[in-house]
Structures are given as C-alpha cells and as structure tokens.
Amino acid sequence: MSTRGVLVVAVGLVVLGGAAAGIGPASAGAAPTIGGPSVVGYYDRVTLTGTTPAPDQAVTVYFRSAASSTYASSRQFTSDSSARFSLSYFERQSLYYYAQVGTVRSTVHRTALVVATCTVSAPAFTRVALAGFQPRGWHSPQLTDFASMSASANGVWAGAAVTFNQSSDATVAVIRWTGGSRATVLNTFTYRGGFPVLGENSEASVSVAGVTHSGAVVAAVAGTSRAVANQMFQGFVWANGQRYRLHAPSGWSVHPTGVYGLSGAIVGWVRNGPTSSATHSYAVSWATPTSPLTKIAEISAGYGSSVSADAAGDIAYVDVNQHSQVHISGADYPLTGPHGENGEGRLFSGPGTHFYGSQYGPIVRWNVQYPSASGIRPERTIAPRDDTLWIAAAGGRGDVVVGWDAGKQHLRTSYGAYRALPAEPSLTGGVAPETAINENGTVAFTSTKDSLVHLLRCTR
Image 1 (cartoon, rainbow, N blue to C red):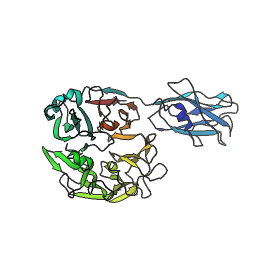
Image 2 (cartoon, rainbow, N blue to C red):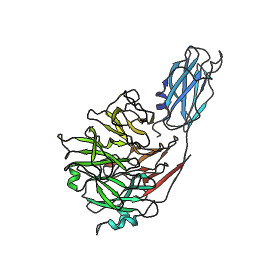
Image 3 (cartoon, one colour):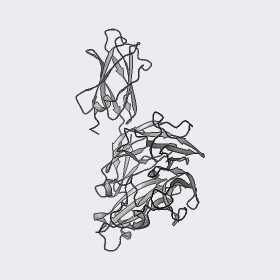
Image 4 (tube, rainbow, N blue to C red):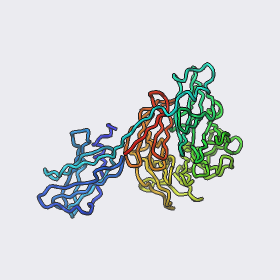
C-alpha cells in the first residue's frame, strides 16, 4: 500500500461546498479552521469541514501520512460566502492535515484508521487425513500438496486439497472440516498436467461453491481432462454420506456457484453444451439437491462466475447485454454504479442482503433489501478500483477479503480495519488459492510456510 501515498489521496479530494453544523466562520485576521472524524474505516468516505478568516478566500489543505514527515498539497479552492468550505476523499491510510490561508495555518489534526489485533492459528488440520487419497508412487505430500478452503457455514468449512505427481498430473480431493486435526475427504478427481486445478478468480477443475445450512457441500467439477478442455462441468452435492448430481438437460455444463437459505437452495449457471459461439448460458437455481433446475435469465458469456445469491435468495447476474441485474421475488432490478451507470459489471458473493461488485470503478457494496425499478445504487465503497481487485470472500456480517493479486490479499473487517493476510502460494497461472470467511469474520487461508490452511482471527 506504500505506493498509494498521501499525494494520491490529496489529488483525489473533492470540494463539496458548505460546512458541518457547529463550525462558524473565523474572525477576520484569525487562522483558518478545519476538522473531521478522528477514526475511520478503510476506504470510508471522509468529509473535512472548516472556515476561513473571511468569505471567498483561497484555502489550501495539506496532508501527510503517519509514516512521512512531508506534507503534499491538495488543490486550492475558495470558501463560500459564509467563509465555510468542505471537502471529501476516500481514506486509505492514517493522515495528518491542516488548512492554510496565505501564510496562516490551522491546527494540525489527524484522521486515523481503525486498527485490529489479529492472530494466526497453527495448521487447522494436517496432511495425515489426506494421505489416503494419494495414488501409489506419487511424491510425498510434504513436498507437493496443498489445501485451501472456499466456503463456510455453521461451523463447517469446505474446500479442496491437491497432490501432484512427477508429470504434474493432479488428484484433487473435496474436503470438509469441522474442527480437530483431520479433514474428511468427500471425493477425489484426477486431472492431467497443464490444467488449472484450483485457484481464486479462475475456472478451476474443482470449485467448491458453498456449504448449506445443514452442512452439505456443493461443488462444480470437471469430470475428465477432456471435459476440462471443453469446459464441461457437473454439479455435485455431498450430504448425509451420499453424493447427488444436480439436474440439468443431458449434455449441459453445470456450474453451482453458491447456496442460500435454510432449505439448502443452490444457485449457479449452466451452458447448453461445450463452449462455442452457438451455445447459451443461463443463471439458474435448484431448490434442493434433487430438484429440477429453474432458469432465471440468460447471461453474458464469460460472466458465469458472477452468478451469486444473498441469504434471502436474491440472485445477481450479468445479462446478455452485459448489464448487472438482481432477481428479487420474480422481478429484475439493475445494479448500478455510483452515478447510476449499469454496464459490464463484475459481481461477487452476496451474504446477508448485500452483493459486492464493480462497474469499472471502485469495488462497491449494494444493499438490495429495498429495490428500485430505476436501479439499486451502491450503499458504500469497499476498495478503490476493480482492474486488479476482486472480492475473494465475503461474510454475513460485512467482513470481506479483497484480493489484489496472487498471494496478496487483505481483510477488511465489518468495522473498517484493513489487514494484510499472510502470504499465500502462487498456483497455476499465477492465481491465489481459495479463501473462505465465516459469519464471525474468521478467515481460512493457505500459508506459504507449509501450504496448509490456517485461521486468521481479528479483534477490535
């Protein structure tokens, strides 16, 4: 974050005009005044208000980070007829600031970021439980395998573990963990070298979509190497010691992406054949693991991973016109950007009544509890831009893991603290392993130290 210094923040200041109640104009000849909140969350919108000694005076606000001794100037602007001024910006780091009119300065103030104390656990489980699925003659798991988690609900965590052989062929195990030193292996699948087997923000061979309220595990799985090449997948649910295959017409590719509700309903997308210009993709849902699929809408090719649901069963997707939509009680509503734009959005998981995504701008959060036919605008911003960012995981209380690039991810807690996760290994294609977060804000991540899952817990 050091490259995003205070000068960048200062240049991005927006003059709003006016001032907060309780700040009156300074007396003629007096120093300017300026003030704002003392503590804020990461990327909260901060508004500073102040006064100048006289109306219509030029004022400059200077900033420096806590780690720097040098102030960087923002743009200069003019106070209004009441000698008041106001400006805003999105906070990325703790800042010191003051206002200056001519040669007279205000008192220096500070806006600090919320802090959190975080601890990292020992490995959540060991490789011992995974040794049983290794094909004979493969490398020791201590040298080659790794595990990652991608979903959690009611104390159940689910993800995958991988072992490679000397030819880079991979066996992937779908795993379920509820505590203790062992993870349960639900199923294994083998793929020849060269295909992505796991990874955040990518179409992996095995992708765990979610854990239902009752503890069932849902995943999208490519059945063979040929199926991976043709991007043909099946949807599976492991529940009560059995494996169920999600229903779809014969020859269709099935991709569950999430779960919602107490009933264990599943959301995802399907494609009516191998990838080609003649095939079509649809956002769908399954009421139970054995129910027929229900089509929601046709979606834009390449945006299947954007199909997601919140806890109430509202389903977000990108339509064939590359517009972001949310399906609520049988009706569709546009998810717009901060200024009402509705373009080729990227959508992410939606716990609670929220969805996360972007419209080629900052990553934002939408609250869809009160939809509007004119469009649902963002409730708040989460991170500055979307060209190298994504939401790797989101929890029901508002905690999110923001992925910057492979192995560099940050937790933004529900109360605004922003902490870097320990480094994760880089997988095939430079992607990061999957990450999961539970309803209490605990993050399960894969550590570069041992390629095993650890838990990050933060307190305010």
